[in-house]
Image 1 (cartoon, rainbow over the protein chains, first blue to last red):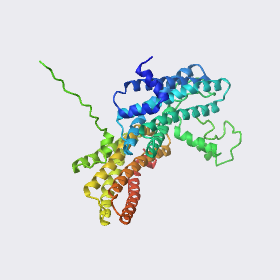
Image 2 (image 1 turned 135 degrees about the vertical axis):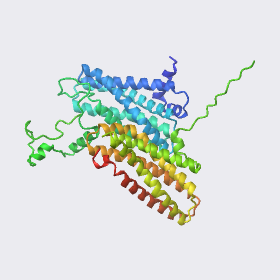
Image 3 (image 1 turned 90 degrees about the vertical axis):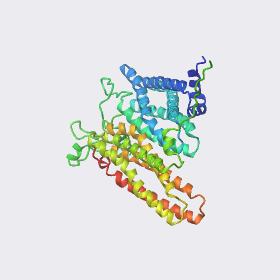
Image 4 (image 1 turned 60 degrees about the vertical axis):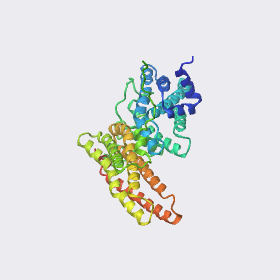
Length: 253
Length: 198
């Protein structure tokens, strides 16, 4: 098969430098767009469905649809920021080149997610619990993100300034992508939930959850207003369901 | 009869970002246009923040986001020019105008680029503290890039100076940077989203 789309697909994996240079040069980027977008939608779909194997049923379909959706939505939101940061720090690229570069990077990351899917599936099949499962998924995202950022770095220049641009962009990407994915939860599905919702009810934000989890990991627990109203009485180690509750006792994942 | 077809020359047009952040010096009118474009683009970020409460907050935030850059442009950059001239730095009003326009346009362009992400975050984040943090991060990023552009442009003008006067200029530039940060922060902190409102 010699279609230009398949050639680009192969390049995405083997030669990120060539893909980055093609994006930088501009010109006809149709084959790059098609190959990268296909890789993104299929790759993220497969990985999303794999995450949902811990729960099965309707969650497979929901996660298979929502993960690509969150990645595409994130890309739409962050490409202007990437374009502006690169231009502001003296590395202006054409907007279409920037879209090509970002899309190619996301496609590459999604292909890495596909490669990690069998491991994730096997882990859930062997009985991996919900919380370690969340950590495994986060580790997979981190690996895929590194593969994607490698391509982006080659696009803006493999030097100190390029590194600064990519780091700032990664900060914007993480914040925006985290919140976009947070709004489209659940991807794994809480074990305690009896039904499978397409969207979970709006609960705080990605940022709040990160802050709360960080505090919890240090052994610092915030208390709800109900508890402070109770006059700061000592919290029992096994809280009574009808009594005051730790704010993060039902921490959303 | 021989028919001739116009030849399409694919001269690559520089992108808006490249034009706004270009180090080339233009006429005063073009520089003011670049500055105005930067301020207008910064207002997009303000609009995105104002979407958290809508209504009048949209206008308040749009004006506030641009006002921080405008204050630095009006109060800071002319003062920097005067101080640099006092130590005989080889800077001209035109070159300073160009450097200022470039830096404010860069900051405004970055704020505009962040606007889509800011809109999502401002609308969907529940906690006022988290919304304020995200807002501050965006303003810091854009302001930092603008300041980087300005100091790079001014330092490029000082290349030929002997070490002693160049040191004086660098000290002035450092002092200006601190002043610009404090001034922009003073103006931006009037944004309702940073005061826990909106």
